[in-house]
Length: 274
Image 1 (cartoon, rainbow, N blue to C red):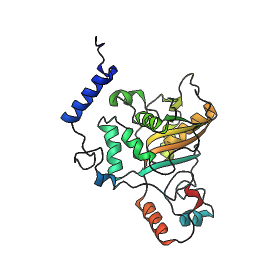
Image 2 (image 1 turned 135 degrees about the vertical axis):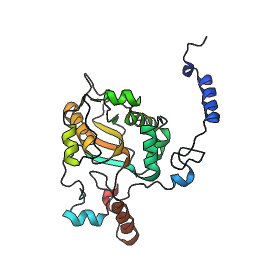
Image 3 (image 1 turned 45 degrees about the horizontal axis):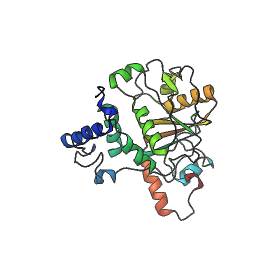
């Protein structure tokens, strides 16, 4: 007898999945052609970040630019004057073109199959933690936005990464009051806007022996949200925090400068690319 939830029966779930694929074939989210979430041509247009990245915020920067600014390759000009509570941030792709289309489909069109995005990200260098003694968590969403959207896109992406990387995931954070839209705010405005809005979930404890947490988000913009989440995790759980995003906003000049440096420079690769 069927219990009313067909998804609990594997063979029946498979039939509905196959039927859905026939009635509603997958189309490229960027150009609309059929075949996959990104067609071959659009997937080739993704802009991977690297190989030369700021060790702190993950911004693409040539070794020459980093060293010339202060005689150090630890921080880029963008984050040198900013206080971050996370140890490092990395993203797979520049937030433009097909990557932007994937994220927008996730955020605004109800796309919930994130294994494809996780697979794309995990194929990029420097995104897989070298140690498995780590727990994944994600940037929280306020209950009002969760109610209107129906899901937390960062949480879905974190679960997909958890499956791909074989790393446990926990919901550790909550956002207990709504904040103003961040889009038009600068770095200091975003930081002030977020103050006091994010806390640990009541009674939460790490279920593993991990003393490191990978904070997952769909897009890294200025790092303000990630930094506030990291501060709460560090103060509440005593853990080191690294940030892992699918995409990152970058200036086109940064990507061009990095490509030109790799093309023209004959010195050994910068050690910070690892």
